[in-house]
Length: 205
Ligand code: GRF
Image 1 (cartoon, rainbow, N blue to C red):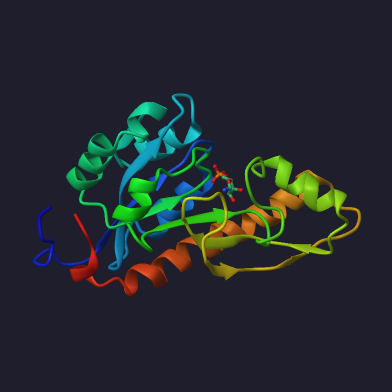
Image 2 (cartoon, rainbow, N blue to C red):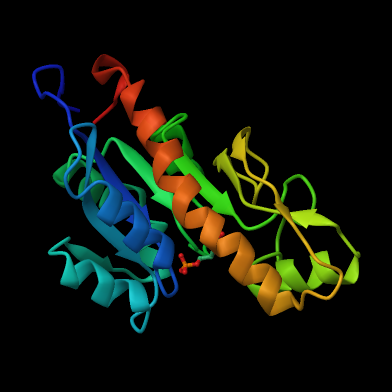
């Protein structure tokens, strides 16, 4: 693996997403003109994902990959090396991240979850399932969690959370909208603070 000691900042971010990509868009827009980082790649496992268009609209390269490709160590690390990726931000990415990626990017893969982890996390807790569970539990607050990614869904160390107050009358859809609005503000800021602290010499390629 080549040394990147001579390459200056900005840090290079890859976003992995499977859905509409509203968080991906907020991250790309935040870093469109930012000295700390740039989004250099979108990876998706879904050929119809809205995030593809959002990447194209911003001239960010998009890789549409099959599950088998994402789980192929040599292929995947080769792609990330090609794009010289320093940090991976998951934004609605529904596949489990393979162990080799967690090991190749220690403390360099982050995710946003639309609830206050450790509550309402784990396998099957994605999309509206999360907000429906929050509603069913009668929670008085919810909000996004940004966390490091390890080999288990939603179990890596928590980096940041932001709370929103819920009204007892809120539907699951209204809870989702409240939380998503906060996600768009929170996630780019947390990523910026992380990349600002990245030490280039610690980044493996
Ligand atoms: C967000 O709610 C995020 O918290 C979760 O997946 C959703 C992705 O939404 N991980 P979008 O594709 O960014 O609009």
